[in-house]
Image (cartoon, rainbow, N blue to C red; front, side, top):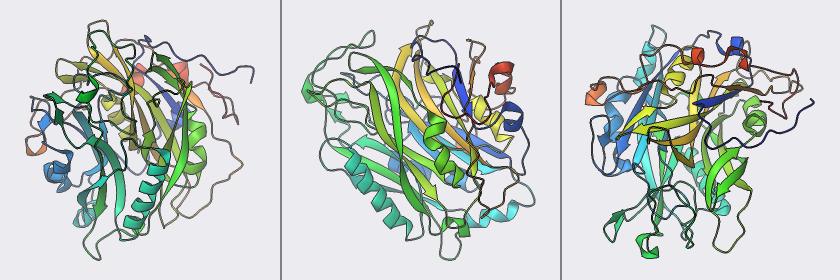
Length: 433
């Protein structure tokens, strides 16, 4: 191709995000038979604010989200907004969580679907030891498959600490990471080293499922199987703290999407065990869902997006782009939070997240195999403007009194560089930027 892998991006890069897709932009923006609607809700475990709903535990989410379920919305993904991994203290807002709910836009054809709305269930699974390892994750996937044979669908999981407070300090829930290192890393401005006894090794995994009343489950929700897939990233660090990452997202996921599988969860082992050298790469696992009805292959979009928090509220995130892509039938299935954190020029906290969306390949019906000789195209696009939208928050009030985020803005794709979809036909291995 005449170009190699680019250097890791500068952690001070001011672009709002990058987009990678198996399609060129005109294909991404092609209308389909399905249009999605999204609701983005933020929850806090440490108190309510005007744009954030308080819950004492994420196990309360089924009750909190019930007003949305009655209107056809379903939980698509759940993730911590701030992932404070590898630091000696919890970062501000590390007890904030984002729930993304989705539904097909109501129409005469979809009105009959609401009678089979599932029930959201959450189970608490104890974890052995004080860390989440590859062997532990594989055992968890086996347990998920055992539950799926009982007629439920796996939605995702989130890792939390059991004891929320030790020595008067609130702990940060950590997702798929080892216990914090005993040696102090370099840290963000204002971080201070704390004693080791401020950490609790007691971890629990909250696992979310959808279940249906007998005879009411859609056929494609029965007999689902869940598989693991490789997840590897190249990283740079400041001390023990990850400051930048790069991954071949399309190459990692393409084979699974071509099978018609859906990416539903991810686990990354962010921290380095004590005494081991700091690696230049990190490993983890993706979790894919295989349905029994042989759905068509999927195209995909992967977004690396900065989320900015101003005061106690989310100021900028992937919300506007998500609403734009929803008009073209793109379904969000997974969000990977990262421990990459910085302060912007205004002093606001910013963190990077990776968002995965999928859409059935156009012109292909369920059960029809896709031509496996066709290579997945690697497309990247950098945001042209360093200035994010001023705010994502809509007036509070939503359904059931919840605030709703991320709507009511012009197409976010218009903020992206028109000429950014530079694509070499048949080449998937390298993204040139």
